[in-house]
Image (tube, rainbow, N blue to C red):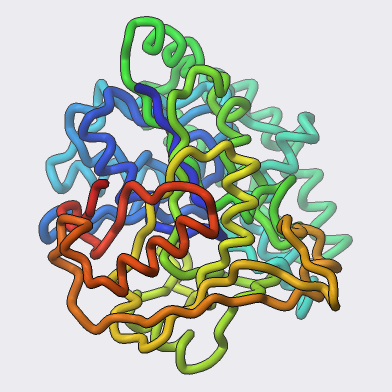
Length: 424
């Protein structure tokens, strides 16, 4: 079976844990979008792995890992991640494949990201300053794009780098009055990148098609969440790639018809990092409780996440555009101790009921949430492994979400560790 895992909210839903768990029965795990702005956390025993570019299945020694063409790669971050796993005796030699068509994030991308956000001031997007957006922009612009395959011809790459950096420096000086970037330093870094990463570089699209034809089981791993999708999210407060399952075909070269099941991951509540609309946000004691209990701070940036009630309207939208079959509901344990739990089951704009999530900011800024409220629970659920053993109020809450989203919840997370998972 080939499975695609994507987030149904604004990221940070717990995809890393779900991917790690399902990777146990997969041959190959594929990361197909985003860059080092993603943060996927996997907890194995007493070890905690915070991965940004490597697929979450990397910590399983028998799984091949693919970084596909849709990912923009920060070589320094990737090399550091490979090294950190090796220190824990998890080696990727012979089982990591990097697309030769994946684009590379370089120092001038990060500088451009930082300068642009600073210039926007109060209107900033809230990026991670990892250079993701500028790298994707160069990819679309084509002329200044640099891919993994370009590392194979360093002499030619050097000429191109100097031309690109010359242009970037003129832009930075004229628009931002910024100091110039040294092209020579970037080239020397690229020499190191070539030595460390080219042994993994290959045509991953060919590899995936041959593997699927040969009966291998492939697990596709999305980054961020569908509400951050460049085309279908809350634009412009989105990421720079298609973070929904719609990005999988272009990001990997594998069509959707080859995927047997699409699983959407959602938290039992909602969080968001950075700027942008958030209809169910609770900027109050409830939001603070969820943040502290769930340790809601960004894996990549450390920024505190905004927290609020589960938004079934938004999740139903991402389910629809992503062709999601089932839901993995994570962080149920975080809600323990809250007396009353609310789920947003509808929107209103004035007297008009809105049944489909309006990703347009003007409409979204005017919605009023319609809530259904149920009793919470105080029992510890972190050691529960059978759905029937959950407190009745927890089961009622899950049933309410299933009814509001019209999808079955087949995986429930009750803690950060591998074994803190309920399968239905």
